[in-house]
Amino acid sequence: MYRERGEERIRGAVRWVSVSGGAGVTRVLPDGCMDLLWSSRAGLLVAGPDRTAHVSRSVPGERWIGLRLPPGMGPAVFGVPGDELRDRRVPLADLWGRPAGELAERVGAATEGSGWTRAGALVLAEATRARLRAAGGPDPLGARVAARLAAGATVAATAAEVGLGARALHRRSLALFGYGPKTLARILRMRRALDLAHAGAPLAEVAARTGYADQAHLTRDVREFAGMPPTRLLAEAGG
Image 1 (spheres, helix red, strand yellow):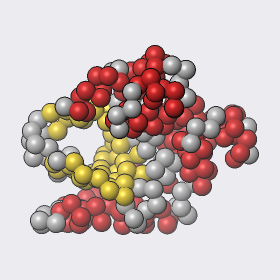
Image 2 (tube, one colour):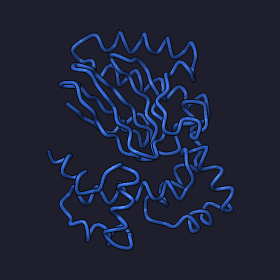
Image 3 (cartoon, one colour):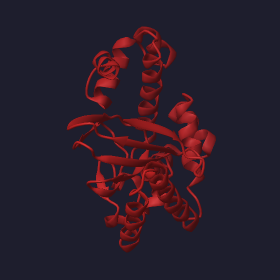
Image 4 (cartoon, helix red, strand yellow):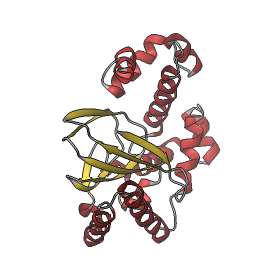
């Protein structure tokens, strides 16, 4: 079971819940985001920004609640630059210390009843909002850069629009997103392409509509970031 919905308390965030029906693996594709996670088995974790697909292994009955933060927001919440968490899953206690233990107790209590999904998600959202307030909010540059790149703007055009040179944009992007703007742009383009493909568009059409040189170019990018070609990825999702 997997469900997700927008988190109305935090702009751009998505909350999701999952219950494992059995032992198995889940392939989580890069998306430029960072997640605050609670697992009934592992407790509170931070999922850093991935550059390649992360393979998650669950045990039967394991419950998950996640709060997916939009690109650029994670550093304000977790208190460390994005590139320090790239391709990592880190116990929240390693970043927050004692407050993480207190939060774990609140989430644990909230998830004991029948309404555990909503109650647990509310606790995570309120803790995240408190961290954002304490940090003075996320760096507004993150949302601006991510929005322009998601819309298909080039890195050069994005740098000019936000008033930064190429090196400065790269340095700020590493801290905000965990990788440079070119990598973020490629990941966001891949996500747009896969959304179209999942909706039924042929891959050649998907490649043309999302700015790839051709279908082979699309296939290379998906293989690099997802670990398999789009045909196999789509087949697994359909199965």
